[in-house]
Image (cartoon, rainbow, N blue to C red; front, top):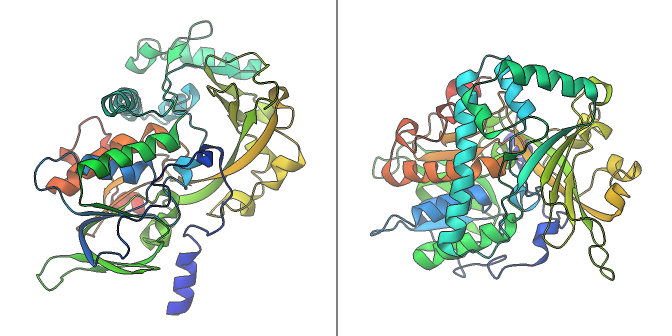
Length: 432
């Protein structure tokens, strides 16, 4: 493959310039298109690529270190929180069926660690919102998994009975009772306000939006004998001893070794809005839901996330387009909507509301878990990505852990113990 062909292949995994406008990005923060300095610095202690929840979490936690705060350059190809964080359903939870599938594979230890990690996120989000005084419509709801198909419901009852007494079941109850989950109906406001707090605390945090990174060069031994990364952007190059790739679905565009390990894929969601003239005239939902229809023995799931304005965010309908892989699999194009959803008018009339849609580019992994930690074989480079559509339940604390590794040069095994050790990015997982 020629250098030109290779570069074109890598660019096909980088953010497109003309994305659709998602629901969350309608009330923009002053930092949305901010550049701290007119020109890019020539070097920085730490370069973070990606200003979504993962990258901002790393920047925020690095800025809590007290004295001698590192100089941080936060690069974003488009605007702050314009990728998957600003395009998801704003709904963070783990379905009971997802846990049961892991148990079917014999991954009992992974289930316990994963459930504990999600639970820790609930506390972490609540703590940082209250401690930093973030006005971001943070809400904690009860949540239901609703089974419309009796066959699926019966299978769940049987599996639930077999799991009785296992630690992960303590926060969940079957049928009539509900279980505590976190719903984050605040992605954009949370990220931008948290970033603002980090910038206030660390004057050496330099934000540069609309600065896409198109290539990185790893130098194993620089002039001082230490590894270094050269980050090439549309506005010049930057040298850094430490780099964090908080790029999720776009990771392959900069780290080709994650090809077929973190695979971008396209999903769809819709904001069902109350009438601007009449207001929210439909019954208010006080909980969040996963609706499992069980059509044709396939997983057919929608999720509903009620908004304070009386509207509802609904995601799903994947079975309408999943057979057309070219439409949604291995793509980062969030400039178009999914035609099958519009053609079937799936969201039209959904709960008797109007709708407008947007796209979310996510990253999937073969084993269903994200990759975090040092890039295998690349000292001074760290990665966070591959959330399999559940970034809100995993990215914030994983970002905190990566910040600990970056700041103190810690191995993955010595960071916050709540982070599951099987999230570590390794050569074995890359070989999958």
